[in-house]
Length: 326
Ligand code: 5GP
Ligand code: MN
Image (spheres, rainbow, N blue to C red):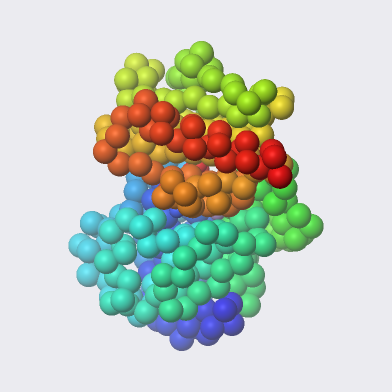
């Protein structure tokens, strides 16, 4: 419950705020917005994400303060509360999961596939972005917003709602975004950083992705992949390909888009998007992942990307066909 989390935050002196591996805009926004707010209240705060922060977010100087688990251990920081944000299950926080059970842990999350791995939680999938939940908490904590905090908080609201155009961009998302703009948030700074900051290498890699694109089920299902060789050939990493799945969903008539990303040898990330009716959160659970109805993912270890495609596509095809017959 939100009230309990607010109370725990007010009582704590040293707080560790943790986000998820393969962090996205909403996750980084949620971690930083809560961390900055707690610092404003005079608390000692450490922000943790056990993954490399994608280069696109490096324009935000605040991300420099985010530590991975190894650096966190070196700090000898002893938090009296850990708050995990935008995370649906314990396997999504990397090695910070070691702390669950040892430190009092609370979670703030908006995933429909949330699996309640902590004692204290506020989980509400009706929020388009976790950053909106953090905004609500910060308001209740009485935190004063300035341009930096408002812009960073707004980043999560904008990125998880596709810049206020996905079905989760409801009246509350528009209202929260408007309030954050009133508090000094600068949406153009976020759109420049996220949308107008692409490397030419990304376009070249995407061109190859389009050459390999498969379209099935009368245009409803579209998928492609990036292998390790393709990343290397174009001088790219998985940080460069996170937007590809949205591009593929934007093809006329496509309901379900999937990108199979071989982010490291033996590690394939399955990134999925739907447009109107197919429930990907349900499907992602079937293949060991999770997420939201219109954006979900899973991670498969120990297999080559081609093999993951061969395994997942027939299952997905079958589920889409089942839905069509309903
Ligand atoms: P993306 O495709 O952008 O990586 O992820 C879309 C959504 O699916 C995000 O909300 C993310 O939390 C969720 N997701 C992605 N990968 C995984 C995964 O491996 N496990 C779980 N449980 N959720 C995932
Ligand atoms: Mn999120």
